Length: 360
Ligand SMILES: Cc1ncc(COP(=O)(O)O)c(C=O)c1O
Image (cartoon, rainbow, N blue to C red):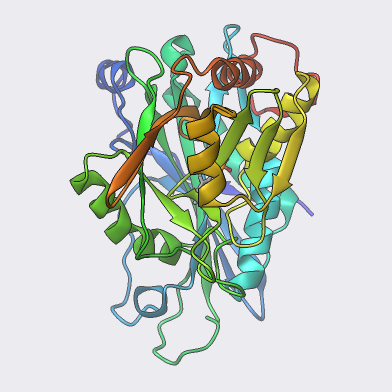
């Protein structure tokens, strides 16, 4: 069932000159488009009052449940402008399905896949002038999120829930070409345990990753690597990206799902790499295999993937008392996969998997 969405346009949208300045150098998460989408849920009325309004602050009671118990989930996706001016999203129904899974874990109400996609399409359509030109891999980052908006301090699932979508233009993740990043292995902190929230896209997972990310930065590294909570032996993922290991014989390994966030880029690479002739294994992958594989030359490339950076080659892994460098600095497989994905997203190659969804 599709939502009835009321629209109130902003009387003070950003003027064309200011917008051109923003889109010339958007950075990430700094600027927000003129409008936002909101729909509310209560047990009696279900999802109701869907609307697009001028972007602006929310007024929240200090007792609003999310501020205390973090009952919150979100998604991250992008809208891409193609050379002909049309605007597209990449597998939006996968983000919608992941949000449904996250909502189950966080005891939040389910928003239909169709309604999620309609919400994203409608806000991007209203704010389409905020989608940058494709040059330099710019895009409009789209952030759907759902939170416990009931004013109540008891610990139970909220009886009032708000779902919103906001949009923020995003520049190229790598300025001046793709560069390998360095990784810090945290041996003290874990991200997710069995039965925990690791597979859900919920703010708490990111809050708990910050201390480890701070440690990584202090050690001169770009990103943090988390191991499994039970044995501290198996590679899970980075703070905000999934991981891939490329072997000299061409086969590729990625950690299996369960306690990691099931990335849409990760899933797409499984299909794409298969088509490019790589055998892909999803399995437990230990930190010893990483160290030994790199040392012996069996592992030739390591890369991370996610919506923000698409594919990031990883140059070195550091831990307290040691480090290993990946042997092949060119990261040929990673860069080929990256190019193939980006070409589909920006409409420069055939969308043979049917991944792209036209918004406008
Ligand atoms: C913890 C974590 N893992 C993996 C990913 C990659 O997911 P996706 O490819 O859907 O962006 C993200 C990005 O959102 C993430 O936050």
